[in-house]
Image (cartoon, rainbow, N blue to C red):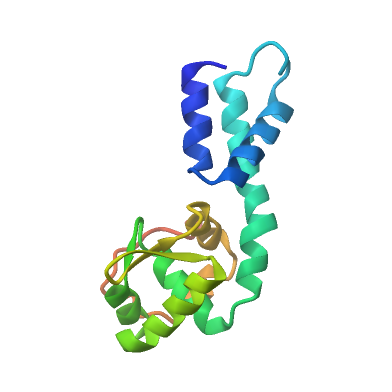
Length: 160
C-alpha cells in the first residue's frame, strides 16, 4: 500500500481499533486486486463504507438507547466542529450547566461522549458528529435548540 493510502486509512480509523478493522475490510473489498496493490482510491472508498458501517453497528444502537433530552445534548454538541464546552451546550439547550452536567455524565457512562478537559467533552467516536449531522431528525432536534447566535453550519441541502 502506498504511504498516502496508509495515511488516509489511519486517519479514517481515528485511533479506534474496530474502525481500523472496518476500514481494512472495506478497503480490501473495494480493491480490484487486493493481493497485489491497494490504491488510495480503494482506501477512500473503504473509509467511506466503514463510516456508514460503524454508524449502523455502533452509533445507532447507542443513540436509540438514549432519551430525547440526551439527543438534544448530542445534537448541541454536533454543532461544534471540535470539542464542546459544557457552557455552550447548556446555552444552546437553554438549560443550566448543572442540568447539562447530568446528561454529560450519563453520556460519558454510555460511551458516546468522553470528558477531555475541564467542562469540555468530545464524541468518544469521532464519526459520531458526522453521523448525527446526517440524521433526518437532526434539523428537527436542532430547531428545539437555541442557536440564534450560532453560525449557520449548513447541515441541510439547499432547496431549488
